[in-house]
Image (tube, rainbow, N blue to C red):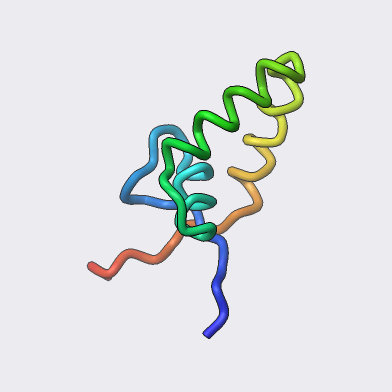
Length: 67
């Protein structure tokens, strides 16, 4: 079974990108969010903002079990 990267619908705060990445990497979503903010502050925020928007558009939404 192969793992696929999806945006999370359960644990999302904005678009679900960080939560989906955390689920894919099997780590806590808070760690990914803190890393994202830390890297964003070190790179003047704008590049990470653009990365997040692009990831939000490209990464598909996970299918819910309720469907």
